[in-house]
Image (cartoon, rainbow, N blue to C red; front, side, top):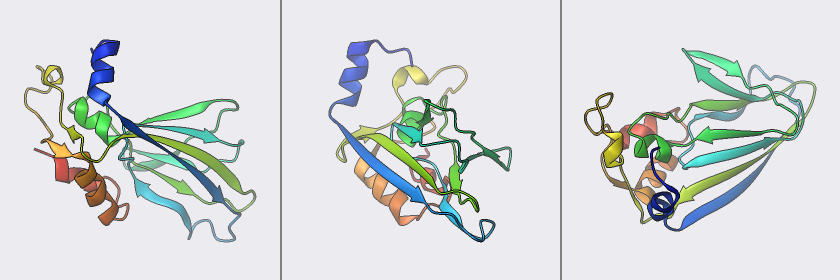
Length: 165
């Protein structure tokens, strides 16, 4: 992002870390039951541990759902909406979902790193450049952004429109 360590620490201030443990039991009709609806994460970053080689996480790319194959002893790091806003869209939060599996249950642990509710988020000045010559997002309080997102009930990335300039 072009910031040194001290600038990054100042930018973040105090942060919130939340851990979510997800259990997806086997499902007789995986084509009819979604584990988690399509959404992007409202956090700065999300760190995901998938417990075994059971697939379930999918990302949307060019209108298609692509499986993210679990890699043993590896973590998945997702860019969240806040990082997309800070970078003025240079780094994108990816729309993703979780599907169920007919043969095996699945467990994952997701760690969300997010600002506190009163923090104002907006594109960083140095991220407005020739490639992105104007701010693509307006300044919003993270708590308002989060509440708006939760009210949208995981409708893909529809909640991000609230922060668009």
